[in-house]
Length: 228
Image 1 (cartoon, helix red, strand yellow):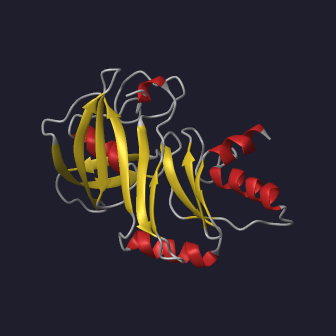
Image 2 (cartoon, rainbow, N blue to C red):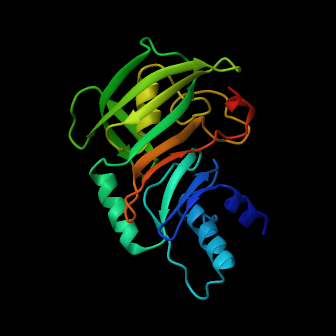
């Protein structure tokens, strides 16, 4: 019941078609080999209780966030809304804005990073290359420096032009701006909760059914390093 209360408190937007949640770091987006409860599992349980639904509950996950990452994530209550959201994501019709606390400030206050990424699925590790390479996928992001935090870290806003696994983590590291707590890509002391300071801050899109303009802002986590 405590887990269900937590997940219900993290819901930012809900109607008959969509369920948008501010995912906590440490929660899987969807079930994996660990068998740990995922966001999808918790939301299905929430829906069963709230709406007194018998049997299986449908919930489609439109996109994912890495386990140690927090922020806004879209789930769909119907297959129609999931199909439409997936199409919108593919056509870059959903703007996703991320905020990252980095160990260093970038040389330039704003800029674009372009590289080519290859994922080792066995090691779950992504390597970036400056030039095209066989098997590598082109990745582009834009960043803007926002401020220095109370803890002395550097807050960057990131907008993705492509969506590749670990893209923000690898590309910010490539410009000497590793993300706080990301021990996978930069040797550093892990954060106490094993999270990384990367947060899916904002989503902007047209509702796939009602056509309403939706703008979602996910509150920062409550950990002290997010006390800006």
